[in-house]
Amino acid sequence: MQSPLGTTKKRLVSGIKPTGRIHVGNYFGAIRQFISMQDEYEAFIFIPNMHALTENVLTKEEVVLHTHNAILDYLAAGLDPEKSVFFKQSDVLAHANLAWVFDCLVTVPYLMRAHAYKDAETKGKEISAGTFTYPVLMAADILLYDAHVVPVGQDQKQHVEYARDIAGKFNHQFGEQFVVPEHLIMSDVAVVPGLDGRKMSKSYGNTIPLFGTDEEISKAVMSVTTDSRARDEEKDPESIILYQIHKLFNPSTELRAAYQQGLGYGDAKKMLIADIIEFVTPMRERRKYYEDNPKLVQEILINGAMRANDVAMKKLFDVYEAVGLTS
Image (cartoon, rainbow, N blue to C red):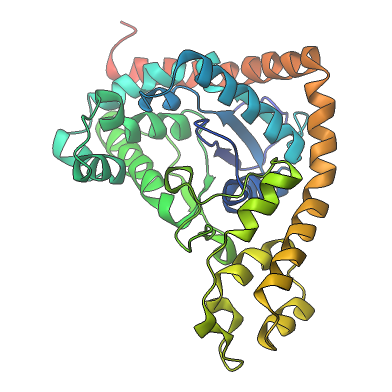
């Protein structure tokens, strides 16, 4: 297996759909993981902008804006383009080509089990073919690069399971072509709670923007749900939504003890605001640097796309040959 980074490390693949501003849940649930593993794995990190089209309420301008912001956010958060292959999904045409092969391999009942489809159906939405086959394109994203691990949140495990199933089915029917990937979840941040205690998600409107202004961060934190019943000193602070968020930025035993001893919610929120701003300040500075250097960002993406295509097109050719499309 030829490596575009010149290594023999196991591969990691990850990306977050650019449908809005990256928030604290995105960072602690996924981005921090693959950034921390850039030395351990050969990382392929991409902006899955083709997946953004399933959000058919987005305009062209919004897709472009969200994609651009995601690129800056990843770099600001610490992604190193020298250590990782960083690219836009739409710059590697093999993603869509491989997805079509997989579309012809899986069945409709199988795809009807997907969480995204079930959720859309429950809400009575008009479901696009893209939403229905979303797991197939995601499987292509993963399998195209022979990923060994995929860092995901607890609620995203099904996407990796789809990739595993499709890899197994293809390998059984056409011969061994794909590595069967494993999901990688950091148990302590598998699901980051939002302002209302549910999973932090743009769709719930309960997020803290990672690169929000001080005012936006303050407003979000001040709206975190609090419950006076959790004031019982014998209760584990883990039952307090505010603490669950706060410990991500300040995991100290002192903070835990303060909550255990009855730290007032007003004071706790002020502390959390200060801790978040201190945490994101270095990232804000890096983001400003890349924002002020668009040519550098363009070079990073071009280089990443070239390296990704080198791997992807070789894999696609092997797949085409296996199914009879090269004869």
